[in-house]
Image (cartoon, rainbow over all chains, first blue to last red; front, side, top):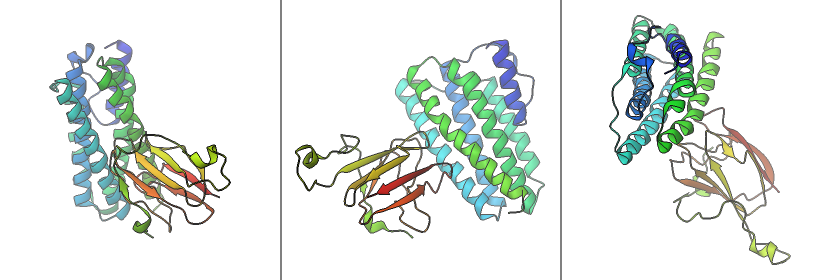
Amino acid sequence: MSYRRSALLALALAAFGAPTVLPAQASQDLTDPEVAHVAVTANTIDIDAAKYAQSRTSNAEVKKFAALMITDHGAVNAQAVALAGKLGVTPKDNAVSQSLLAGAAKAHEALVPLKAAAIDKAYMEREVAYHQAVLDALDQLLIPTTENAELKKLLVAVRPAFAAHLEHARMLSGSLNKGM
Amino acid sequence: MRVPRLFALETVAPIIAVGAIDLAAAAGWSSPRPARQVIELTGIAFQPPSLTVSVGDTVVWLNRDLVPHTATVKGGWDTGSIAVGDSARFVPKKAGQWQYACTYHPTMKALLVVQ
């Protein structure tokens, strides 16, 4: 990974609450099995966050958004896993996946003590930061790094969903801040 | 309001051509047969985002995206959830214009004009 890519990814992960200092492995390009692992990890993180939000919120719009995250990221993961199987690629754990998981754990800890409307706002702000971080990672790291044409095509196809989720999260977060 | 009677799921396989197939018009008949018009759901968007059809045509929404979608008019017709790889169809019975959207993805909007 180039210095520029490292710096951009560090910023993206920092926005999501992950450590800003990338591990030593991030100084190298990711292999396709590692890219596949990052993709599956990123989707799984948001599914888990949505399930937690569903268990804590009483806001109908937030519940609906969380349900959409479970459906959409679940669908994307299913296709990523199916493609990996077809290509004979076994997703491989790596430093970027670990950074994403560390950021997710930190974001989760911040949600736990919150109650009522505060958790709705915090969850939606987390969703804005998360989707922006993943979009940056897709653009600056995952898509440029991937060598396999089919895996790259899937990542490109996934991008509009993340962009739509980001816009949706921004709309909902804005409504909550106005006292929806 | 959900109007399931107007919609039916179809498999992807029978849909070979994309766009209108109007054999009657091509043959110069004065009263063309209803056409089949396909709107693809791809990249969290309706393609084309605006479509004009005639009363009696069959409008088909074909989900080529990675996630489920709907085509829904607020307070009007609704395809219900269209799974990945599936489709839904609608045969408009009257002229009009409908702004519709995906209920799951509020940024996904389009226009259907029936004349």
